[in-house]
Length: 415
Picture 1 (tube, helix red, strand yellow):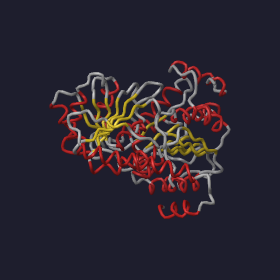
Picture 2 (cartoon, helix red, strand yellow):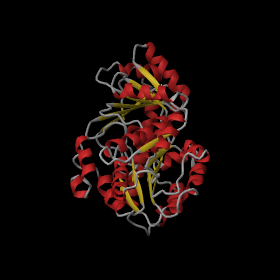
Picture 3 (cartoon, helix red, strand yellow):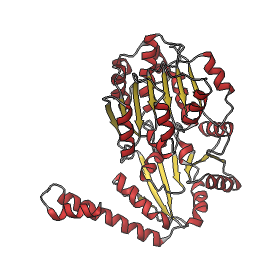
Picture 4 (cartoon, one colour):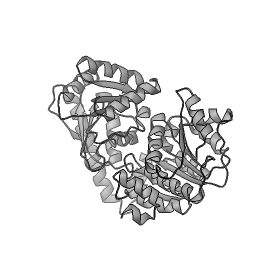
């Protein structure tokens, strides 16, 4: 399958060729034809699957063919400024020969440059919810002529508390429109939202969230909480780790860890919501250019970080939501490159590890040979592994026999 097979117009094919793209990813191959037919779409795909191009390309082609170049015809709503900027870069790259203009708006910076762009006219608007509502109220944005609405990273939108803003925005959209919803996970809240805003949508599901990319090597290091920083410094002494994205739970924790690494001569910086937009973009650019070796991020700030050939992802702290683990490690192992995901697990996080392994249906390899190893934690981990093995055997034994009352009564009690 090539992009030519998807019946794309010459201006887009030319841009894709210059970007070095020859073959569509699975989500692009399945989504683009559906969207070019004018259908609504639910796309369930995790980070690194080529999701952004799956919706930018058909939007560009449809708008180019309809010759609309002034009114806002497409709105892409996304949770973070980093992701908004990244999507804007995609529209710029794929649409460079279409003549279509786009504008990116987000909070945390002065609005003048963004409003000046809007006055010049754009067909495509990429926005975060708060700034969009603010500029609508000020009269800078009208969505009356909208043909496309894209809700990207819907699950993260809910996690960040944007559901009320989304509902306010939906009331401002024309009822006749093509709607696209993309989400890495599909919890009941997202399904309910999708049912309220889409019309007989097609569904494309690529690389289920419960799976992790096979090419990523995953390891667990059991360590006491107070020794985590020392262990991370020890691991970063390995010069084969060219670039590392490190996840922490809190902004304070990211800043503290960044200072500790710099004291040891490791080039590191933190990126989170309390940093200015210029500071965040500077750190991200340095990381992409490999002049900054370690970037420390919270989960929210990390959305939109897309770095070629990122060799390592570290979970300095394990997430308490197992799907988040898949999001995190999906930052590495892209485009056929190998990747390594290392998690530092203290005794309090063993329950999190249990839910992660249950979700991905895989026992993560434990590294026992390191200076800060805690044997008690390894024993606890081995118990978790054994429990998973026993449950897997039980399920395999009984799942095929629905008449087995003991099994189904037990499953009911577990729920």
